[in-house]
Image (cartoon, rainbow, N blue to C red; front, side, top):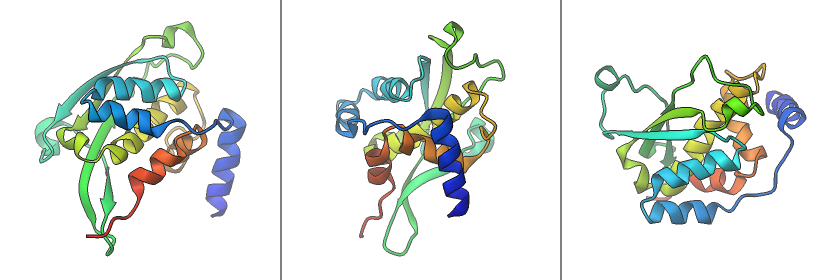
Length: 173
């Protein structure tokens, strides 16, 4: 917990804390099958004026066939075993403009998601907020931009607390 406390303090100093975002409006976009708009809205709510290019890979993809390698976030059953995993991956260009620069506005970022993303909308929002937090930390040239702990905490601090809670909760089966 000391590592978490240090990371939270570090991120608050860099990013601050935002009020809770309306997770239900994001879920409504997914219900309407407007995944592109949902992902773009997540980026906007994180303060990223980027342009998202969204593509899909089969949920039973092979990393060697697709080049798509990512860890998945999945809901868990009462034993802690994952169910219905959704995977996502953001391509982080080395030439990403600095946060706040005019060059970042409309900068194209590619995001690949498994085609089953609409099956668990709450998990999908949490996953995409995490993936786009990688972009935010890199654009800030944050010293902990490669830290998964920091990346996990960014959405929580920037108003996605409820979305993350909903997307990571345990379910009973």
